[in-house]
Image (cartoon, rainbow, N blue to C red; front, side, top):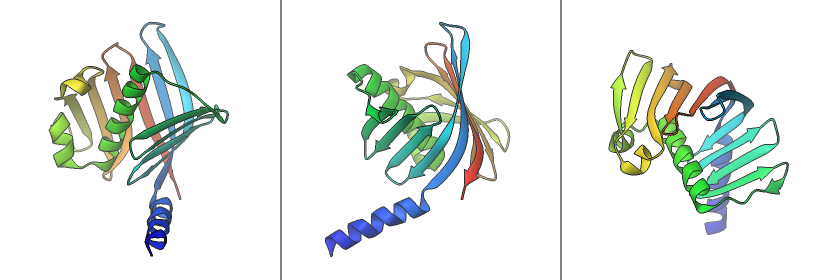
Length: 163
């Protein structure tokens, strides 16, 4: 019975996972250059999965992070892993839109019905994020711009939902 329940929950999560095509623009202050990536992102109750068109895959599930480049596992040091997990946790929190959880970690300022300016409250987040601009349409995220402490900027634009 337990195996059937786990299988059902796993299949339900897969079926109801929300998937999107997205464009990610990373600005590197140190290099003064933009890098544009395209891919697919899917969310479920336990994490997210990102498949970039360049062959890089990120799987973040139940707090465990796995990164692959063209099928080969990439090893990260603890600092890299902590930064990426913090970034992915922030993306998931913004996606879920749980106002009480969001207010625990961030100050949220509503600039208009569709645009929010967000700053971190917790030191663990303040160590790598200065601010976030969040743009929504019909209660769905359309664009996230994350201004990092090192002056890099990551912009994620949702191009369309995959059905």
